[in-house]
Length: 388
Image (cartoon, rainbow, N blue to C red; front, side, top):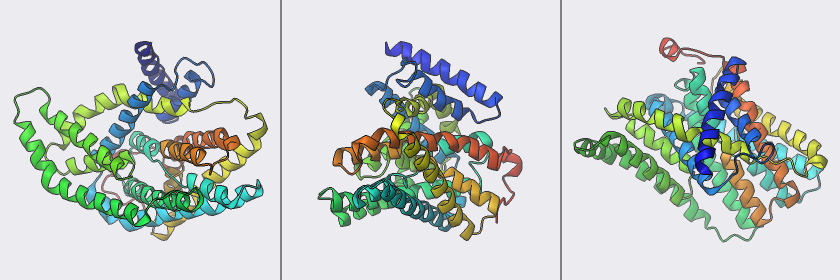
């Protein structure tokens, strides 16, 4: 049965992606929508099984690995201050606005705070793919988005840990949690500088097929595993793996050989899996709730992150575009929603509604980025300062 689902997913995503492009939108939009069509919400041809989840997880890890390979480390470092402002603004605004709105729906303070945190989490996987298609990934705006995603993840994880400890009786040790994050980045930096180049160099001398590619994938999944082991999203680990390899002479070979594997097989499952989470059962009475929270979720990131970008020196267009790139909540928010349901911080009657809100933020991101940024040729524009 799974073999048939592979055929359906790959064929449907390629057709949907092409139709999306023909309509003037990034292909990723069509791929997400086709997941809703194929999934339990409509046709029911593809279900959210464990093996679909595995393929999806591999897909998003490879997607962020490729983003790391394509990222200019110098630009990323130069724009880290801007990334911090964007991340902080993109966390504060959703927490405040969602808290006020949740109070209007008579949720408790704990539940209101958790919903605010839930909608503060940013997953730029969708934005990364969209920016790649539009030719903006390797730009100052793209660097800030990637940096903000890393910082956003750290901030939200720490705040979620505090909330779970205060409101759900979790025995999380905050000092230990922060310590793990610090250890993660220290080890990643040291390994990236001293171990990664030598490791690939050694493996490249093996008389086996695709030795260099295998070395790159080992580093990708190894970094992702280490990230998850210390409480950081796996996609952050795979991104840093790509970033580490991008500083070696093996960058182009690994990127060239990873992209067909990622986009040809695994990444389509990631896009489809987002749509599989949608269910229209029992939401008739929550349409207004979904519409209002979707609007607040979109505007809070657009305003909060946009202001952060503006303060850091970007022009209005780029600031709005960066804010738009931070809108997608993606798989990170889906995981937090499940945690909230289990801990009792997310009322069960609003669980499905919040999942749909997350999906809405993911759906609107690609067309917004296309509308604001348009397309560009990175080769021709790479030396132009777009915003400063």
